[in-house]
Image 1 (tube, rainbow, N blue to C red):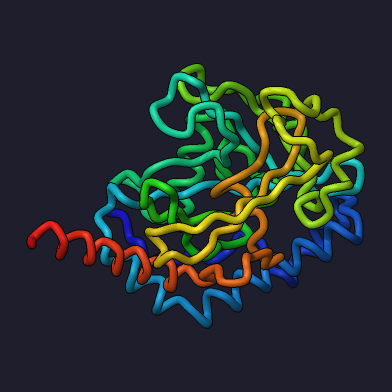
Image 2: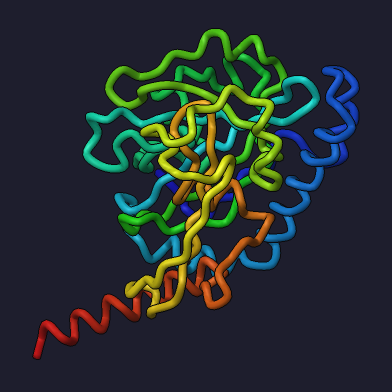
Amino acid sequence: MFDPTARPAPSLTANQVDQLADAINLSEESRGCVKRLIEFVEKDGEANAKAYNRVLQSKPTSKLAAVLVLLYEERGRLRVLLTTRSKSLRTHAGQTALPGGRVDLEDRDWVDTALREAKEEVSLPSPTECGHVHILGVLHPFLSLHRLLVVPVVALLTDTSVLKNLRASEKEVACIFSHPLEAILDPAISAEERLVDVGSEDWPYETEFYNTSDSVVTMLGDTSYRMHRFRTSASPIKGLTSDILSTVYERYASDQIRSFVGIVDAVRAFEEKLAASAER
């Protein structure tokens, strides 16, 4: 039975990172980034768990989903595994996504959901099958365009040979690719990548690496939302995926709602206003 309040202990703690990093020759930069991620997840959970759980418990399981933020090191830099969704899908067709999907009642927790979906979408073996997927923690929830509550699970892959055996689900995934995590902070780093052409279908913008725009969202109480777009070797990183990967960088519009609970409260107020209008 799925428990939305469950926060499984990470399989890799900050104190264990150095030992593992020495064993797999993880760079100092990546080692520090992994430690900071673990510490960020722990502090956020300790400070806000009650508020998050209150919202998560109020939603039916059909409105809950999890995604996997799978990190691995290549040439001294951490990269994140991404997919381009099939154009035949009903929602977000052709867009960049993290492996993931809706919760099944048989899942025990968010980690179960994220790993199950990653196996279905890209054939990623579970930690018990390969022993090289280490869970770093569970981030705070995000609200998707379709009002799903999405919880990211962060993991570190310590054997990149696993990537050679990944296979895209024919029904759900058009392609599997990756992007430097640091390029979300400094988009110019992606100049080292084989990027799609500027002006192409996958990057119809004039800017070279990064594009942004602000829009007023009625559902969020007429506050602004800043859309971040990052040019990649495949489809652009934007929307919810961009928001998740930008979590620790805090790039917001001046009046943008910055907390998950604040966003949920704004949407609830909007829905109550709509319901009241319909009754008149």
